[in-house]
Image (tube, rainbow, N blue to C red; front, side):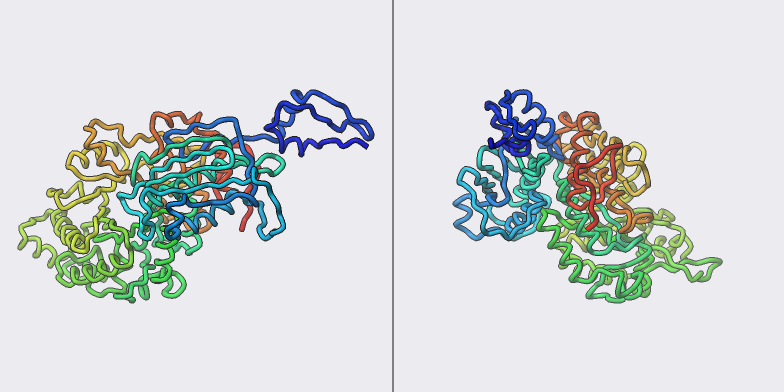
Length: 555
């Protein structure tokens, strides 16, 4: 009996193209044929490549030459000078995480497998700066270089945070053929982000988000190379942050004081989980408006509203005239500064309703003494300036919503302004940078409103620097943010509402604008990336009619 090679066996040797093949045609009969025609069939059946990486690297050169990866003989490693020192805990954890992502079908534990030296493939990491015990910050470099060749790949980064971005890129280069074998093509990449700040805002006040939902979002953020989790942790409806200093804030202000809160342990877990993925955690404690839940646990913090000269029993924004307000805020922000290690803190300052202040005779008398007249914007400016001074004394850089900039006559004490209103948002960006302040752009990326997934292009065709200004002014645009407010979002619909549309913004904030100006060219890459998200357990909405080789499996 003559041995005949199966199509599956041949496909695994697809890179050996110049050979004759013995192919089984019918029982007991084998025919020698030219491999050219047969390989054409096999290439269509079994050989795939990746459409590309999302977000698109700055420089991306790939070749049809490919190398098989076997989980039994694949390893991560440190370059010798780094291995001689202590290993990096961030990278050690990432190696384990990405091994499972690279080889999702591999079941470890088989110690009897043998492999030859020419099957070994190692991804070697080197860092220019070896320190990896801290937290990512606004100045952290995320630049990396990745080279893939026969039997090896090298990943060089300036910092551990850049190495994490390079690991994500490497994971997207690996693909499976129809027979389950893993491959990667010869590739050279040099990459860095276009903008330093690439954030996603989640609102945990209007609907409580379970811890697992937040952690899973952090995973998905890392896949798209987002690097800031803007945690809008409290607001009017609920105060779920459990304060050590003021426990009644959550005891009386949360939806439920036991089940719908974030304990100090929960917050530490989120910060640690984010750090291991190169993500900063930016807390927002918005005031003086959006504070109804605060008043439930902190007496005399909010302004009593009046009707007909007497208190109506309702309350408005924080009372900016009382010394006790600033004593409370100083204590609260001292705690927040110790809990959240990031140097940025978001102070809010948006959508302050002046009705209650206007109705209160004591507020009006205070304004008269201060020379504010009836200009309530000056009263809010007075308040914000005091809060900015409190956080500055704690060595925190404050971010405020654009409302504060719009009514603030003296801009010197402001640092970073987040532009969120619709209309000519680039006009607002231009005003802010002309004042010498840094900008985060959020206006075009509000994803909480229901809408079809195929409108992802509207979030892709955003050009944050398309305004008249000097290069120095444009450098003040430090990035942008996707906002997912919680009025109509909870754990049941967060992921499909966010992904893959947020990924469109991710590429805009990471990649070169000139290389990513075509929606048509981006579409197949985003389709493939969406399929990767599904296989990694992220419920990302479909972009169009079609299928993924590996459909979403609930876990």
